[in-house]
Image (cartoon, rainbow, N blue to C red; front, side, top):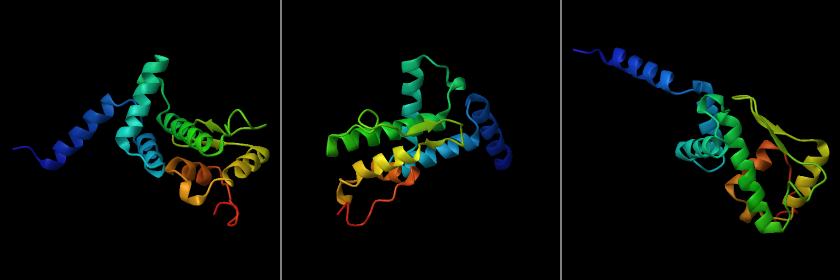
Length: 149
């Protein structure tokens, strides 16, 4: 008879050997997807699509950076639909993804943050999508209360 603890441990070993990402990277990628209004399936879809479109082997991909980039692009598209402004083309400075596996973050200057705040403040709070809220939270944007009502 097989001990359940041993079976669970062997299953984890099996998954670890077949998955090129560290468990903390997976944790952060999925957590980030959920924070952006998605789930683990969406995160894995983004990573698979990235691998296919760039012909990059999974072992060479930063899964967290892919999820961040996907959410940034989603927020970009949502903001463009709501304001007519493209936060990556219609600004002097931009917000970028600084990929570093589980330490991935958004990278931006004070000016980029100010420009982003100005654009987002034109959107009523009720129209914020999950991706826009994720961008606000991760770019440390503070929208004045009277601006987005």
